[in-house]
Length: 299
Image (cartoon, rainbow, N blue to C red):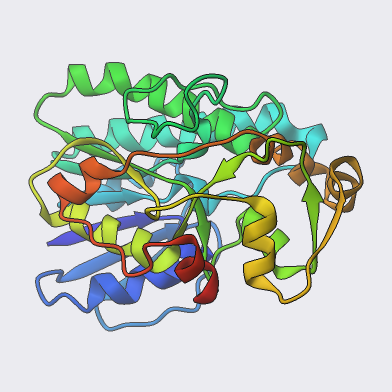
């Protein structure tokens, strides 16, 4: 199998690439990014190219599958550049999928996010994959992910020969991941949220990587949630990360973040609990770190 991986310089890709190339059935991995990554392997080739470049069509020739690490490959932009960044991310994802279909590729694994679900209703009861999507207004990465998923709804119906797997992980935590939650847990303060405390989940980057690998080889399609089995308020996550963790008023904590990150802060204010049974049953996904405690311990 020959696989193309976008966002190959991202932290999550550095966890994914060794896992892919440990499989002898994968004969070649092409990494596509605008930045050079440090990973090296005899069956890995780095290609420096934008996803909107005309060269992408040539790069896709001969590939069997595409892994699109959309959320992992983009940083939240500065507010002054958010409109352009949103348009660029939408265009890049649509161009990739369109050219992949034209090249005869049969499988696309799209790494999306569970954080784009509408949390205004039923968000503590185990959200399933058919739940309404409503990304936060000021978080460009999640807005772009929702726009791409909305576009994929029509794209898939127009290309029944193409299998698309949409993986929707909760907050990703791990040594190579740069998620907002991961950065908050690296500090010794956390935002104090109003009672009743919202319930959150997380998922370890190693378990996300395994889900991506399984999505390449298993006969599955559609959306799949990825999360550990239990849920907890943010203050418990922070205290699991540190013996001493001090709460700050949420407004103060938000001001400590970069302006670009602050737009995504509201995601932490609402409960979000996922039902991940579809991934466990149909994908055969068995996370090694299947509790909040285990994920935080091994971050």
